Length: 143
View (cartoon, rainbow, N blue to C red):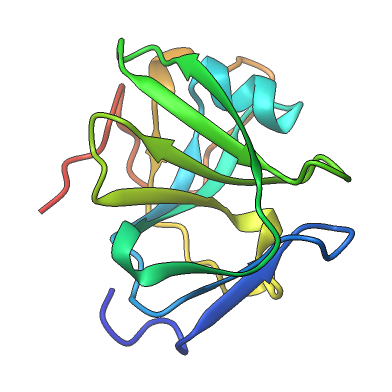
């Protein structure tokens, strides 16, 4: 994905309390259909960008966290604004070098370039995903 995004990529919550900047290209971008993302998004999937954790820095505020046991059996810490509730990031305890950014929290969500659907074993039948992108039953292969 090198060169696909203009750096830095910035974002934050709806009320503006929590802001962030990312200084590295995403590792991948896609749509996650896991049951936990369905809860977090309130719909059939979450559109996400996986980024190197070291490239993400908070520029304002501090998110609140809620830890969950993911379908993978690993702990995921869901980060969100303590005031407006906007979902912002997920911290993967099993992969601390990667953070997952919710695409809806980007200042310009239109910059996202999804390349896959993941955790499709949990996809809802009413959520079509016939966009021609690859589908993975669980996690994607990460080079």
